[in-house]
Image (cartoon, helix red, strand yellow):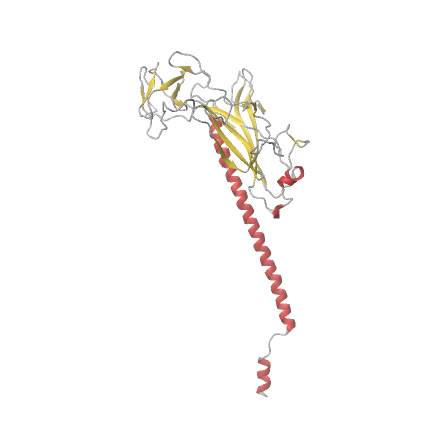
Length: 364
């Protein structure tokens, strides 16, 4: 056999047709890989945003639940009006849930921007909670506090009362026999010195609190079409928060941005209207905590409409979902449910929304 013919055959390459077919197949495969990578990247980014949104909602619910549970709670006898220990005068620690914030109803409030102008979104509720502090831990919770004592020993990890701080300068001491309020005359010392001396023996279980204050939560616009839930401590409990207070009065009230991405908050109060049974079960849910003489708020239902912080062009039109905020709420003439894409596309398209709802039992 002619060896030159064999060498010539071995030196032959791919034809142009074969190369074009290979390139076409490679392009198809590469396009598929890029599509999968792009889809995976979008899915990862979306899941990350939704995970952050869920974490924010969980944080808010835990924050609200912590304060709602102790609203109006005074220990064993939360049904008894507290008295000043010095003279027995009854004192009003404030309603557990406020109906006004800055002079207007806590229900259906316009969401406003930095200039105080309403923005084109559904109205949102505010939540105003009045509560004593978390119970302070005594050095020994099994012992009684004896009549005539002026010193109270707290656990080393407790937040100590402070006579120089208007929110920590009184102690509310309660057991099943009633509730009295004492003034603190020591400054961040342990044991704490009070006046007047204990006017009776307090028997286990004993609860000790710091004086009551109010906390307000409200949704506000923070610019660039974004929202956040704000928290304000109403230190003088007058329903105005925040407010600049004169020197020598209470410490200045502060408002802080708690969590971003909260677009709407709706609040319903579970009211026990059956004074005869007082089983702690709500007979009705009402958007306002206006109570009759025998009514009592025993639970609070919170609904949060959360929205991702970033607007994404690849999600245009992806928010076509209806959210039931409140039966009596209207938006731009549309009564009932709110659909971000259909009712407010210019400001809502490109964002993802989620609704979170929980019911919190009030401890009192």
